[in-house]
Length: 141
Image 1 (cartoon, rainbow, N blue to C red):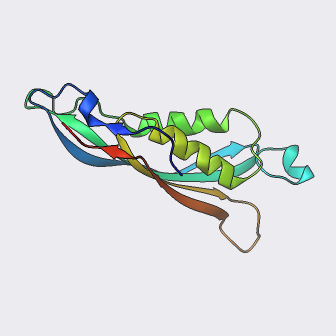
Image 2 (cartoon, rainbow, N blue to C red; image 1 turned 90 degrees about the vertical axis):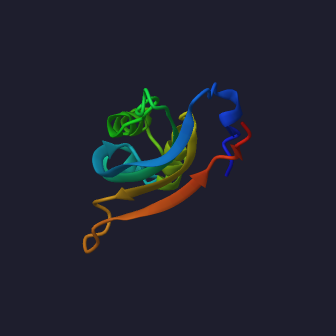
């Protein structure tokens, strides 16, 4: 699935800047969400766990090695904002929303998102889905 947002390094002024890839991850973020298609799931929040890895290019110069970084706090805030938007029918839909928002972050290359419901099957730790999405890349400088 393409988000329509190409990674356009050519649009960034790059006098003395080179790019390094980094991966920012959010692990085992547990929160409550309105999610599910069944009647009882429409009435109460459920515990979910979100894991994600966001790979992006970071501009680096000799003078500003941490310029334009995007941290874990920002990823947690992003996930919480999406979950807070209201009811989502499927974990697949929630994972797609999270992935699309992550790929809208400037210079994002790819994202892997796992969303799990924690209290569905008594003898299982969780049930869920994992997806990986990528941005198109235009690397001309």
